[in-house]
Length: 254
Image 1 (cartoon, helix red, strand yellow):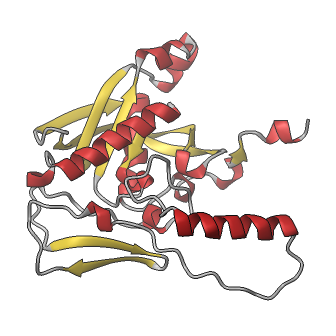
Image 2: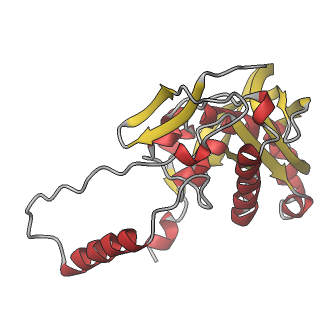
C-alpha cells in the first residue's frame, strides 16, 4: 500500500501521541529523532513514609538525568506495558523512505534487540518507534531446542529473518487455536490466547520490495501478535484472563 503522509513529526508526550503538521516536511524524510517520551514532571506528595533508599535513588536518578540525556528511540531495550507507545496506532511509512537511513536504523535496531533477547518477533513500537514495521525470525537453533511432539503440536518450523513494512494481514483459515503466549513488553507473564491457524501478510521488505508470505501454525501466531502491536493491541486484550500467570510463580514460593 502506497501512503503519502503530510506529517513529519510524531511526538510522544506522557498523555499520549499527537500528529502535528510541519511546513518543512519532506515526503522522503522521517524525523525519528522527534519520536521520544516526555516524562511527566515529578510531583511531591509531601509523604514522609518513603524510605531513605528510595530518596537516594530518586536523587541519583535526578543527577544522572542532569548529566546524561535520556535515550531516544529507537531504543536498545523493549518498552514495557504502560508506555503510551504500546497503545498507539502506528503510522504508515512512506515507501520512498524505507531504504533511507532512519528507517534502516529502526530495522537494524529491531533485529539486534530481537536476537539479543532471543524472541521470535518484534514490532517497531516495542522499541519506542510508532511506525508500522515488524520483524520475525525462528532460527533452526531454537527449533532444535523443542521436542518433536512440541513441534508438531504447535506447528513450529524454522523461519529466516523476515521484515515487513506497512504490513497487511489476511486470514486464510478462520479456525482458531489456543496456546500460551508471552510478550517482551509484558515481561514475566504469559496467558492463553486464541489465534487463527493460517494467515497471509503482504507489505514491503527492508529493501522496499513488495512481498507476500503465507504463514501457518506458530509463524501465523507470531505474525498476528506483532500485527496487534501496530494497532496498539496487546495479548492481554485477547487472552483468557483465568490463564494469566507469572511464569516465575513457583520460584517465589521457594
